[in-house]
Length: 418
Image 1 (cartoon, rainbow, N blue to C red):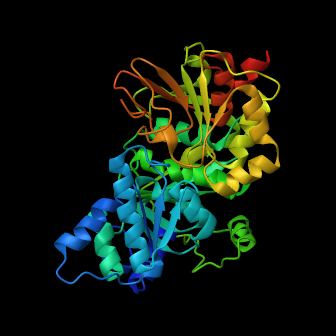
Image 2 (image 1 turned 90 degrees about the horizontal axis):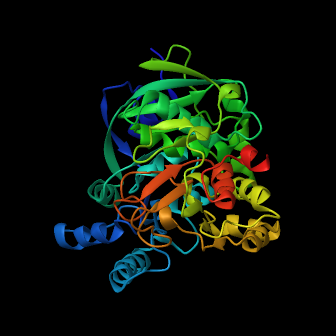
Image 3 (image 1 turned 180 degrees about the vertical axis):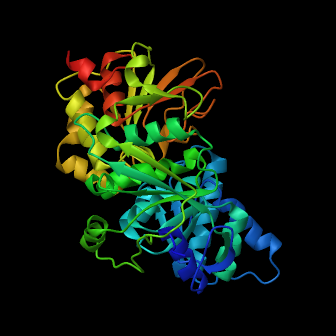
């Protein structure tokens, strides 16, 4: 019986010839990442719960401060200091103020064939490079820290066959929200979403990150693409080499298969308060907004900023709207500066922030108030996600968000031009 990409990665990490859905394997972890959302809890458990605390392989660990940057309270400052001091004491790679954790990991660490645990649910982003990345709690992360290993229940895999090519003005975010709307927020629970087909070959690594990042919003354990020539060239440009390059066998077993024609995807939006309540964006046009957000680990990359800047260039943000633009990393910010995108945003009246999670996290920058409405490229739109429980969050593409910021109400880019 053949194996899927995910099964092959788990088999390699477990040192066994075969892994199939339903098996439980002890695996060696290639990397572990933790951010300031929970690292202070992991550090406390390390000191207070372990009889003989030690870090198995410090160089496999990465700590990233990205959720509240800069710190927003003495409590946050104390938690981040605990994280900072622990990293220094144990020789752990430490990043602060340089970007969102998953963007940092993709830019500097992730390699095809790796098995990676991250103390953040959107660790599935790493499948864009053919790695098995999955989110875990801080207790599981602690076990990995002190042993270098963990266990995995091998998930079933769903095949998503992508055909065609996205039309101009339609983006990978529209595609993934469409998929989630189709299969539901629990449609891939504890399963792998494997993206393949000729349509997958039309997507850049940044595009693939969008799909893999949002897979957890369909309940997935992870998502993955084959590390093809596009991915390997992207990796080579950054001076890294793959651990292993896998493709699924022809006789691999899939629990389900779906086909999506990219040429038929249209701009969509997810309505409050559920990420799978997805409708054509034009169905929600006209909804007055108070704030727009362009950023996050899903849509804060240079391509997203280029799209947003192209729409607001020569225009002004609506007087009653705060438009937050938040690059996903320092590299993205510097590239945007070089291309003049930051100038365009500032001249339009947008608020350009330092690289961090910002309002997607809903705990610091741009928190929205009672009954306010946000149109966002963030990852989630649950009740209270971005602020007051009565506030509402709509999810859309960078183009829809930027157009809405100008119009003052939800609006697609083509409607803005009319």
